[in-house]
Image (cartoon, rainbow, N blue to C red):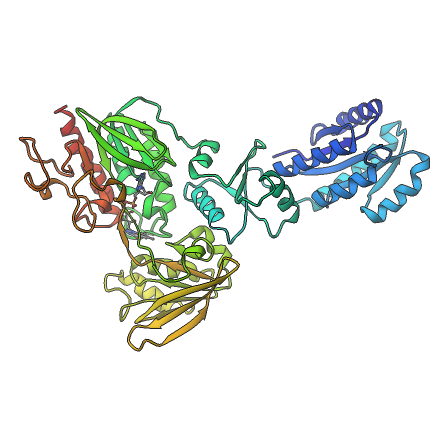
Length: 551
Ligand SMILES: Cc1cc2nc3c(=O)[nH]c(=O)nc-3n(C[C@H](O)[C@H](O)[C@H](O)COP(=O)(O)OP(=O)(O)OC[C@H]3O[C@@H](n4cnc5c(N)ncnc54)[C@H](O)[C@@H]3O)c2cc1C
């Protein structure tokens, strides 16, 4: 736990040394004793402590300081630390100032100089004040803090990145903490570029990219080796299974993930059909277990890098990242999965991350406690989302275009939805526009697809689950795909149409580029389930082994 600070401020060097000595003698075990040689310096110390989120229990400040008096300083520090104990050191002539400070700054005590012996004239007073302070102190969070606006898409993106990577952080709503707003505005060059990520070492990131956050919080972002047997693109269940099997079978394996290990599955609140978990397993838990397992076998996992290209330089394959970096290997597995389809209706773009979300956005659930929200979609993931949010929201409307919930929705989900009183299923309806004010969702227009009749609904949150599309936009022109953008592999590769020139046939999971494989949801004709992705991920490594015997 961080020790609370005791801050002594005096412009008289000798007096300051004496205060510091006496404070340290008695309190150093439980507190940090800090000192400042002027009012301005004292204020800067207080601001820095606030920026770092450090608690302050006491300001012990001399009244007589030329540029900024003790009371003037206490007026300012009170804005930063309203609960800290405030004690003035005074000479007899300052008594009137001290008495008025009792009202002006809520002064807790004034001490006459000199205070010797401290056992009689200093410690009893401070002991009392500090024990009262402990009883009301709310010690701040000792880790990463994200300062932002709940209605800022960039703030949401950073929070989502941290929560998907299961990095604990404290969220500070800038509108609820005026003192933080002042500091953050000062440190983001006078503007309000959000979010600001405050790190425990006192440094901060203003409106950072995911990669910048990853570097700062110690997630691996640099490949350790110059060369790998296999590079896996994507850290969903398929990619994680690739990594576990490749590394456990002795291959030098590097997995590159742009966002967070877990992929789509990582966003699922409860996966109930995965073998071996009779009560279900949350996507986050499964992702964490798989990540630990892959690392334990020696696979490297790079997070925060998007792969933007793969090229052939026989016998090597070169994988390119968005920042221009490259990594070489013998074989590549594309496991980029699928991403949610976008809802294209007027007004939606500026509200994404500010009331409108794709997928479950579980980190946002608490914000919608007691509010009305809607889920767009009628398939399994929409059903899971509705059940998840029904635990928080006052009312959940499922907006379903078809005549009922998707026939492929698992029976247990259908039953649970109909048993949940605060979920309403609206069918044969679609969203036609969304409206918001001050960049926050306020209402949604819903049209009946049969009658054309439109109704408005006041909503705080709209969570969209309208299907998914393969994430292959970065691989266009690299490997052969079907008309929907899914990667073709194995027996689906035609020698003529896809330019396969080797004597042997493509291996299972091999694309039309020898040594480049695809597994999981991104592969044409895959069964899009967690277990299937894991199965493909592990089986693809068998093909990688066979390929490696040929290079
Ligand atoms: C909300 C939800 C609930 C679900 N519930 C269930 C369930 O209960 N049971 C079930 O069996 N299935 C469920 N599914 C489906 C299941 O999650 C998927 O079938 C499975 O995750 C597919 O795994 P994958 O590894 O192929 O791809 P994905 O999980 O899509 O992972 C792909 C990964 O690749 C990364 N990536 C993409 N492009 C790049 C790039 N260019 N560079 C670097 N990284 C990249 C992505 O960020 C992502 O992490 C659910 C899906 C969703 C969305």
